Structure formats: C-alpha cells, structure tokens
Length: 297
Image (cartoon, rainbow, N blue to C red; front, side, top):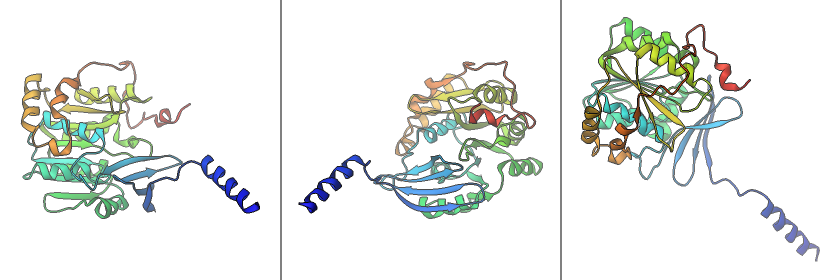
C-alpha cells in the first residue's frame, strides 16, 4: 500500500513538472568575450552567445538540409545581391556559424571573401560544429572588425560588398555603430559598392541608428519581413538602383538561391525608402553611443 502511494505521488509530481528539454548541449565554453553554447535538437545545431543571463541563437543549421538558411535575417542579408549581383571582393564582419560566408563562397565561385571575427573560440566552434572551412578564397581574420577596416583603408583595399553581422550577447558592439565607423566602411567600398547591415526592427536605438546610417550614406533601403524581428539596411556607395534593376537582379538570382530558401523575388517590393524614424535624434558617434538605451532606464 505504501509502495502504491509512493508511485501515485511520483506520477503526480512528474505530471506537474515541465517536459524535459529535447535540446542537448554539445559544447560550452567561456571565451574572452562571452559564453559560447553549441546546442542540438532533432532538426538543427545552433550557436548561442551568453553575456549575462540570457541566451540568443546566433547561428543555426539543419544537418539534413545544410544549405537552407534557418534564420529569416540571413535570407534577408542576401538581398544585397539585388544591389550588387556579382561582387568580386566581399567583407563580412561577424562569423557566427559561418552561414553567410559559406553560402557566398558557394554562390560566387570567383569571389574572394574576407570574414573578420574577434573571438577565436567562435572560429573554432564554426569549424568543428558547422563545417565552416577556409581556403584561398575564403579567409578568416581573427581581429576586431574596426581595426581590420582601418588598416584595410590605409592599405587601399576595396570591397564590392560589405556585410555587417557582428553581434554579441546583447546587440551590435558600440564601436561598430557610430558615424565614424560607417565613414570608414564607406571609404573601404568601391564606387557602387553595397553595404548590408543586420539590425533590429525595434530598438530604443532605432531612431539614432537610422540617422547614423543616413548621415553616412544618404538614403538607404530598409528591408523588413513580417516573420522577423530584424531589419536589414541596404546602402550603396553611389545612387540606389531603381525598381526595374532590383526586379531584374531578383529574377537572375531566383534559381541559384532556391536551395537556400531565399525568397529573393519578394524582396524588391519589400524594400522601403520611407523615413520611419525621428529625424531629430542624434546620430551615434564615438563620443555619443548610449548603449544604456538597450538596457532600460
């Protein structure tokens, strides 16, 4: 009788507890910059960064469909090909699991891709768990992106496409959001070169951030999709293309991007030039970068 009561009690307690997580932690490492977690569930392997108590997936891939881009924002970043359909020299700030450089390496066989990642532990994890590989045309530089860009400008290096996708556990590092930094990025771009920047669609820095990009580049495209909390800023070192050019580039890329699940044909209609922010807000500068706005009052 006592045994039966214990079994009933155990069953009741079990039913009251939340279901066990199906996520396995494959790797946990405290690097100089953050805690890196590599997790696996039935359908995907993910990289997470943790600075305080919260974790956010930075990169994920499905081993059964390794080319498919899991996150909507990575698909949105490929919208840069609407403005520059055949870049020869590409710079990516921020590696994560290597989704963007791996895809561009496959899609642009003649392009040279430099990826800058400050954290060597991230590079090691991308190699081990995400199959990221380097080579003659796929090069990783373990360095702060701003330092790399300053030196590249001095050395007269130029890029047709620059992608800013450097995130920590909270948001984009402050020194990679300022007017001075964006001026350095623009100096690095070829005539007609394109910038794609991954940012948040809603943020207490949204107005400041938007004014900063406008100060550096003039008008830019905002790309948003309903299913994502991110926005991608698409700017050009020169005049922006018209809708006819955007649609033609989308049609040309549609087939090649199908395996990556990028709905490129939908993007031209989603690109907006609307000024949907408060233009009286100050641009972010090296002396004015109020990161505290991201952390509440």
